[in-house]
Image (cartoon, rainbow, N blue to C red; front, side):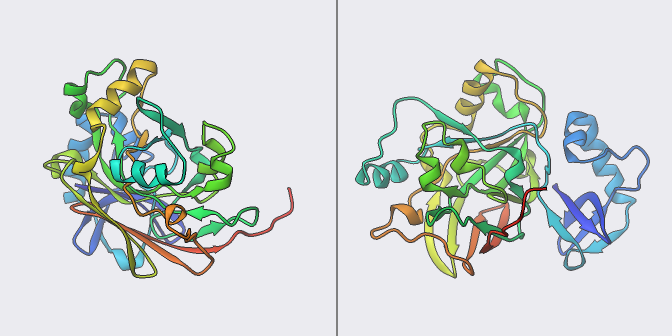
Length: 291
């Protein structure tokens, strides 16, 4: 299934995408408040969704606004340096990763929808993109073995791990540069795990203004998804709806020679085979007074 969160006539709703339509299950008896709450029900929640979609009205996708499938996850985590091609281009710029998995936190307030505009910060000229496969956790879990990780995964999304490079490099945690408002678009829906035969065999591509910048395959990941889940759950509990961004291949603008950072008016499209695509236009960051 393709599970979606969307806005229609001013109301936030959930449903299942089929072709050019979405089945709106929001008004069905027993409907959860959102997809995060649905995932918390486990297999029963997905079974409810399959039944509810059969009895629900259809809306044309063209008449709704798709939102991030999980608008308010408990965690949004990213893995740095998980493609050898990206590590190689970073090394040319003098950036060297240490051994092991290097995780960073994206504040959940950075989340935006799959087709929402994203802000070019007025405090930096180093705004960049990173197309990535996103993993959505489906079950509360701790101490998961790599070989058992499939059982705790709900499905997959497309992520653009947008980064403000000078702020990112201020500290090894990367948190500030990864967490500017609007810099976490993902979607366009959550494709459930049973729909993806092998998440490590998917084409992943990123375009800027129609120019192909990233062209790779998830087979090139250094750390597999099971290894990621095992690493994280050794330290802390993962919860339904948590988002894991699994790393980006070569082709980021900041590591080109010369660098080609995003400007207002640019359009960034990230597409992953069997999942879909997100597309975001860059606009100037609004200058607002403090409330």
